[in-house]
Image 1 (cartoon, one colour):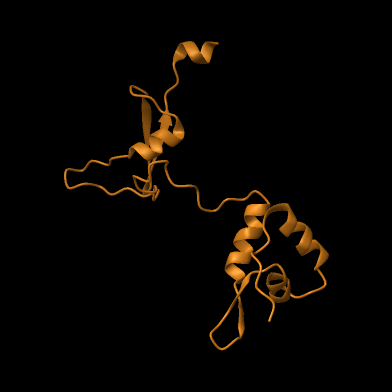
Image 2: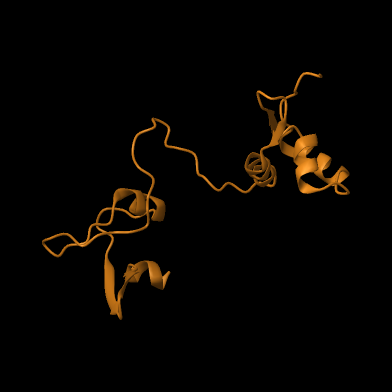
Length: 127
């Protein structure tokens, strides 16, 4: 049995998929190296890894890279009302939006939702 090669990635993967468009998805994934061999000698195609590699090759990243030092949590985009009635918006969100200390917002209440509208400096709007 031939030794299994590393899966193809990047532009080479996109070209190989294009060349193998006459094959089924599973056959294409296997030809591109996205499979494992079980103890019994059977091969199992890793479709999830194949699709992830295809998306990455096309420049689509579904899972952003972790912070450099590995600390912190990923934002969940949900908040909870605390027992004192306050809602805290974490630093991950303010950083992502490029907010600075002192930025002001107007609170607009709707039915089961809250909109925060950033108040722009009048001098910045006039410019």
